[in-house]
Image (cartoon, rainbow, N blue to C red; front, side, top):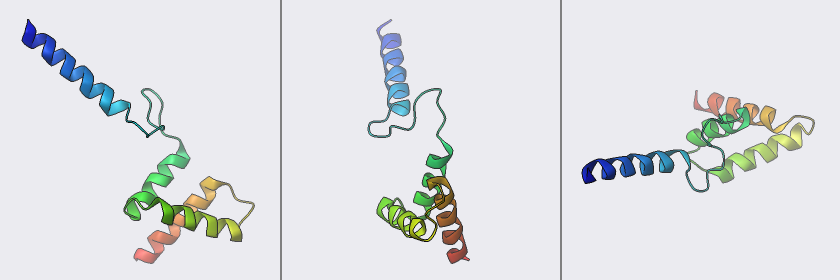
Length: 86
């Protein structure tokens, strides 16, 4: 009986830690990531997690295209990173 209780507590702790990560703010059970957050994740993978580089790139594109939304700017940044890798 004690072993079963320990296993249930361990599984519960794992699930809570997996889905409610501190500082994440985006991942909540039953709520998918927004499209903007998905594009940010793609760029962060390309920049090895360098959020500063991502924000600088978005700011540079915003100066050239002030009418575009952040999502459109993220797509431009992604496309340029992909083009640079080829």
